[in-house]
View 1 (tube, rainbow, N blue to C red):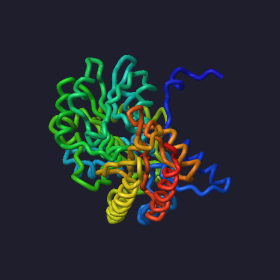
View 2 (tube, rainbow, N blue to C red):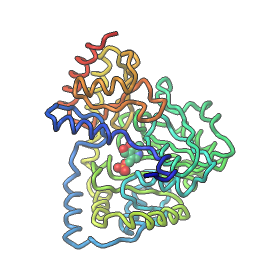
View 3 (cartoon, rainbow, N blue to C red):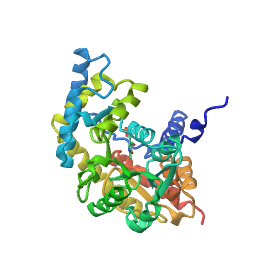
View 4 (cartoon, rainbow, N blue to C red):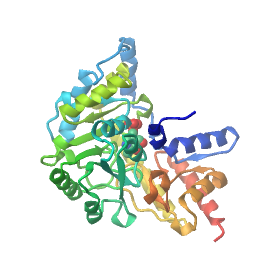
Length: 389
Ligand code: PLP
């Protein structure tokens, strides 16, 4: 069967493929330590679960408005308003089934064939895919280890052309854990304003920070009206399977996103939206508890990986990924990732799953227990010691 040109342009997310392979190996009796998928291992906090259960019992089981229920949009407006220090109207919020849809909505709503969009590389693979689906040209912004995976300003400036319509940023970043400083954001903002470029700011890891503070580009003067904030509940509240996220942007763009929602999922599961209100307005202790636990795990895995010959890793400032430089092993990203899975039963992702500038790296998601991390480190060390140089 011949599929559309659009499908041929679409990319994918390797994490799900590696997870499927690792699960198959488990079914065949192999023991696997999972570092491949970027999802919290914690359960959703009890108050949120109870709110979801109650919402079903209270019959919040019907369609809701495509843009999202007003109460949740109000809660999001309040939360983003407070944390980003900007006024947000509920009409500027669109509720989506996961933050992910905001990426495709943005590229679909803003880009035409011939337009260019700059995106971080290595970066979340859906950025490049969504730009291509829209028929636009993806322009990778290399994030280099020597710059702590932040933007290289001079290089960034050179990527701007009259065709640049969109810049995607992600701080704290997947897969690198890098954070954009306020100065970096101001630099990007100045360029965006001068050249009339929109920004998609993926802030899904904004609550998972270990060093420094979180800054949103939308908080900078003149930027709210040219920014689409992507955020959600998956990482912050360990709610990946609930599928709940949102966009905060201008009313005009929100209307276009709502049109896209109407054309696809109609509305996000209504009782899930009610649970989202509890997540934002209820106690936040679990969020801080999880952040502290990730921090302990970060310290363990980074220090452990740095002791393995051929590996070196910078201490990530946010998110829950270790982006390990494996150049010293003499293998490529894909080779070592495959080797660790086959030889040691350790599932990781090759850096190239995040774009070509990910060559020489593999990603470990450390949203897993300290015991798993210790076991994984032991296995990696043993497997690496067997590599013939
Ligand atoms: N953005 C980034 C950078 C991510 O890493 C992810 C998930 O891995 C998402 C967005 C999407 O998350 P969700 O759709 O579960 O909200």
